[in-house]
Amino acid sequence: MDTDERWHWGRSEQDGRVHAFRGGGDTVETACADEVSSSDLIDTHFGVRCVHCLMTVGDQITNRVSA
Ligand SMILES: [Zn+2]
Image (cartoon, rainbow, N blue to C red; front, side, top):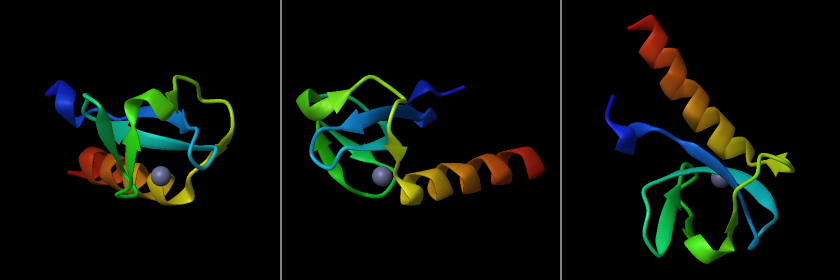
């Protein structure tokens, strides 16, 4: 599996929501197409998840298992 395709979850200090993101570097792109600075991301699942990220990741999982 290509590790770049895997989603990670982290809480953004910018809006307090837990987003799905991938990539690395100074800024990462979230599944809801926001850009978050890596220094603003907290490595935790604790908090309110971003609904847009949940749906985007959920759709991809559904496509993968039903393919
Ligand atoms: Zn999000």
